[in-house]
Image 1 (cartoon, rainbow, N blue to C red):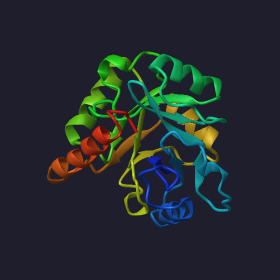
Image 2 (cartoon, one colour):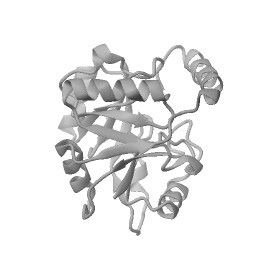
Image 3 (cartoon, rainbow, N blue to C red):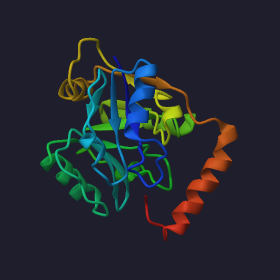
Image 4 (spheres, rainbow, N blue to C red):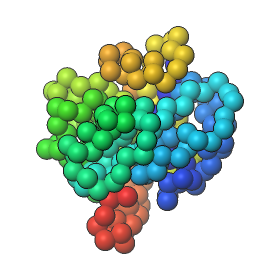
Length: 216
């Protein structure tokens, strides 16, 4: 099974595609599972869907130190708390906490904030450079943490640009999380091209400054 575990819908302030458009793209690209990880919003799972793609209830939480992916939660996780408190809230909501794109300097946690209490580390993100993804792989290996991968798509056209490969036979999102924690996954896809780095960095940093240096 192929899963894209990092997607933003129009429920995110910077997302451009509806949940239905994302699901249509996922089906067209043969994905078996997605996680719609909107910024500090837990809404996408409420949309009615009757299809074959597994949807993990999820959110991308802006902690005071960087972004954290929450998978399998049953309630919205509030933003702006420290790393440890955010992890506690995710666990209390029944989920697992994953360090998102840890080496993205304007929204990643940075190596010093990726503690042993994280359940996994995102090691392949299509909006991160090959170098940043490589460093994330080495960090996860050093800490003996499971991997995850996702496109970080903000529009349906980018869904599946990076992904997590899971064993066949997984039938629900609980099973997906079980396989992640067991380390029975591979990650792959495309990195952010060097030619896109300046434009992407300028856009992201300008928006960051516009938010008063507040993480999205």
